Image (cartoon, rainbow, N blue to C red; front, top):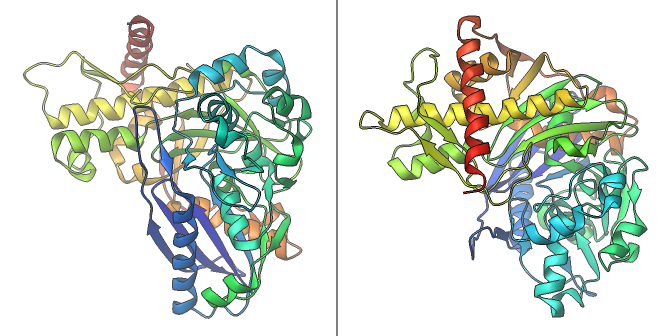
Length: 478
């Protein structure tokens, strides 16, 4: 038997094919584009996800024998509001996770205690519920036509299977889920002028949600495989990385940044701005500290300087103490720990000697300090992390890894194939849904390298983090 994992990312859709021993047999990626019609807006055309899936699945089928594909798992970027009408037509472009236009609606919802009490989270501007409420207030004709609200990967599921289904980990990021009970909250939906009938059916991420439609199977050369519930991107990455048992953790250096810890119980603490969500397997939850710009901050500097990210970070030498130059990576606001949609990025203490290399070092330090904020927020809930898997494109920079390990004073473990985390997690969920396998197949990956802190520089970086926190407190109201 073989299994496919589809990972719907912000910038690309990735598909991987694995065998019964979870060996990756093939992969294919299709780029996606984001439109930003106004400041703070971030949108995508859902049809592009469907086109990309057909391209990726067809490519796998053309290159490999896929006649015995049994299960398909889905992972996807969270919080997007995909609004569809009575005939499943898309009513408007999907507002993505990093769209912050609904900050006023989010703030109003967050003042209603039931949202934090039932969801275990602050209502962030990036979450789904305030986006839909923005549509209600600003595009009432669209709101009146809503038959279903689907998260991005769940719209892709609708295209692939014909089923309106979501699962617990992604649904927990909408502000409509009773996270402890793992069910939609009728009270929260009613507060947003919506009903349970406008929500998809819920399954666990490791359960079956439907089968590949006959016409899609014929078009791609695949059998009508079972499609698993799947997971939001971070929960899927955790399944792919084996971060399922209580106390295991990972740090993700992707477009955004995540410090993720698995929990065997429900431990909400909204005031910390830590996300507390359902995991993708039953009776398991997880916590996340989330920052909105990780490698995205480095890509911003790349555009500014005309140098690639690899050029900016490739010759930084051994880890050194921070200079006075300070970077706050709040290019599109921030989640943990500030829940601040209005704050923007800052460079402080620039002088004539500040060149592209010095600026790059400051950017890496600033993002690392943001991760240290997440670590402090998780610690406030009682979650202590001593070692984490390091994943995502930013792990190509050894300097950055040394910086994170030393600032957070934890050991980083670098997997051999970290780039396939969410897609592998999706494939594993496809395996669980279509066989008798359970969470035990979500094992830790082979570790290529472990990176320990540099004790001599920890105090210098701790002081840098203190300056960083003070800078935010001074600048946030300007």
